[in-house]
Length: 305
Image (cartoon, rainbow, N blue to C red):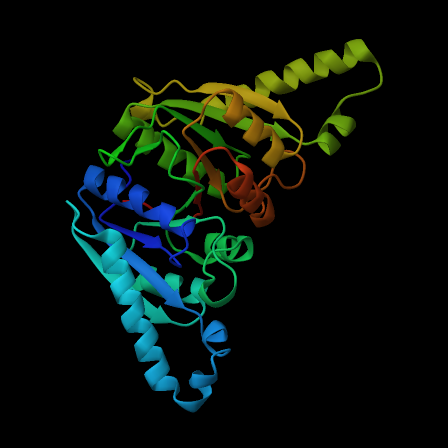
């Protein structure tokens, strides 16, 4: 399976933080020869605090749209990729979701937080909603400094990918995306399952020797299951490092990613684990906001060709 990226969308509210999405979008568009859309959503609830809005809403919207178009052209300038500005009015998650369907977007890139007040776009709650409603993967970025993207040469360097897996349909879909990216960029895959504290306390008995034996068998079984996820046609080149982590998923994955210098974390949006749930929306959102590298969230809505 090869993930298709023909259309990529960057969301920005013009804050320095949300503008971090653009170097990633340009570099990925160059890599995949994709068309790049730069989207700015004018939030109606924000516009409403202008006194002029109540007096002449149409003129107010047109003026803000014109200003936004000028800002987009100033930010992007001349690029070696085909790009198109998209300026719309409404609620951010709803508008981005609509554009994804309309333009057949293959990837949305957003920042984890943006400017509050008049030009607010991407905050934690909005990012989480995007994860839940989008019909394509969402790449959440934090800063332009990460080695994942070379902002000078506009190139992608992806050497290590960490995939969080709980064996749910969404995490399986996330792994398929990760395998495709690993093949595209010749990156190493690290495939992790996280056992939460509540699971450990139930599975491991007070007897230390017995506990260690149960844990060893459990880890071996889980690692075998992780290796079983590798597609038949990829086994000649794809041999991921499998690991079992303990703790809260967002903490365990973040720590592993930092200590092992991961370039990207790939997660399923919805999931279920050995004991209840591993990756529900709130957990995935926390990983995305706290991870030391970009995070790609994938759901079964985001089917690939």
